[in-house]
Length: 309
Image (cartoon, rainbow, N blue to C red; front, side, top):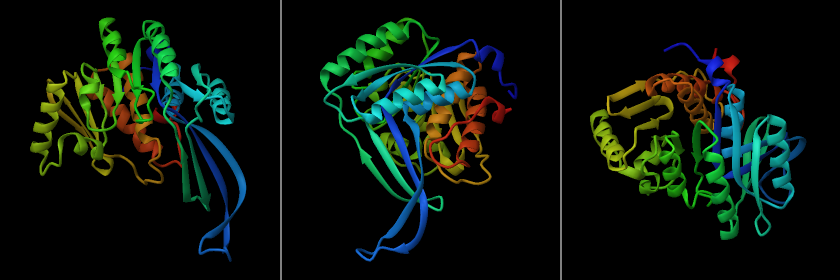
């Protein structure tokens, strides 16, 4: 269980489809309160852009040693151009559909002394023509990869996710999904779903014991014909449900600094280890380790194979 199969991972190609976003950080110092309103004045000293959403999953896949292709929708704007630049820089193979009526999803964070003071979100749903282009490209790309990862941030890119899952399953390509919302029928026949604790509660309701959670999780898994269901539970670690029963990994994080993008790192680690032939409990072991590392970093970050080892 403790062997990370890097040599095999290097040979694998993973396709990520999902909602793309740019995470923009403005770092500065706070030395006074504004005379205009009771708010801190941040003197910006540094700016940084990072790949967010599905693009962060792809970035983590590259960092872990596999090849990653990325399919998503961006606007014909500066943020879209920056996503193109950052994917090229990271070594990701990008397939970006440009929607000229769309502003690229942008999350702008203002930080003072490493503390987040404000986040501003710009997000708009893609148009049907862009979705059609994406769906057509997806069919071509899915058949060329070892694993399909669907990163759903509920921004509209995965409107036709059912068809993507069905197409991959026909070709016996594993499908890993980071879900959103409570309509899990959309993810029918996926290989794995990775809801966090609050997303799981949204889907099945609250639970009062580990036994009740297992009952609810297995019922959800069987209802939607899922091979596995992994619930990420923050300080409680993560719990896996399969036909073989329940497996659990306790949280390893020594210090939680920022949980931004931690789910992306977990999903990416599951994808690369599963592509290399590890079983679900082994994949969860490495995903839990990667998650414990990334929450100790500021902002949307990655974990490398070197850090894991």
